[in-house]
Image (tube, rainbow, N blue to C red; front, side, top):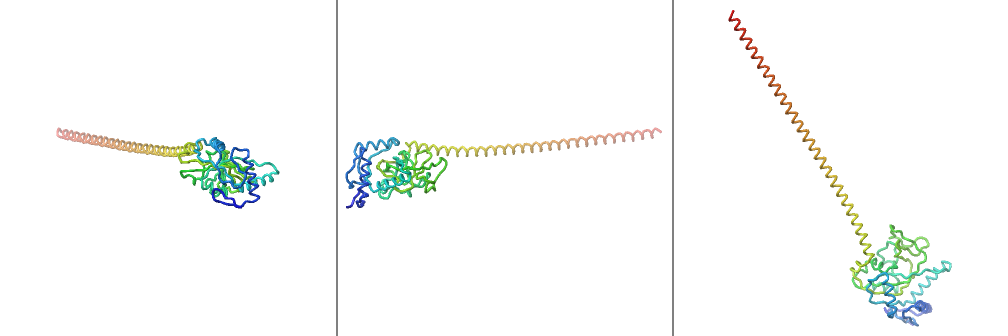
Length: 322
């Protein structure tokens, strides 16, 4: 017997699949969502009105402006069975202690979301790996929307994958540290967590199971309404303002240095002019003194000539009288 999904994929019914289906039904038993008695359920199935409002309210707690227009429940027994097997492996490795499960979000495009139902979320699509090169989840849908991969930035539809995620041993990424090259978390950690507690990065297959696909309309303008985008923008503005301040200070220093140099040049030119004027004054004074001395000498010589002339005339008169 073959099992056909709503996306056209098929897989053989087996005891594993049947058992996983029973467990998946048990998972939804106490929820208001529709569940089925067999494995021939669509891979993506509509939820009833009560379930729709419940999931919508869950998203709107952290992303109130999210324009949701459709919600699907995921019915992937094989994937859920692998998830439970991995959960049991971790539990046994922990000495039988329960494994923590968190309901987290991952935003992607609609084609990538559908593809993930057969091959899982692909860490190789990761474009922002500040907290590790794995698949990123968040406890805040708005945060997911702002920091989703750039490949989802086309105007149209995005999908929030509401997942249950195994979080056993965590490694905290410090605020000023970036782990772009972190492929496997250190020590026994299976999850890296951002310093603000919003991001959880997973590195291994089947450590998450998609519960719901939440489809919402997206345009770049929506980012302006996010507090995370505002914070990110403010950080950028602060950085630009700091760079501008530094540049202004450098220009001011250059201006001050240039003004100081100009002042020094002016003072130097003034000193040179003063020295030249002093030299000219001293030269003029020297010339005046020289001219006065020359005139005095000429007067003295003229006086001596007159005296000699008078003396000579007196001698002539005396000789004539004798």
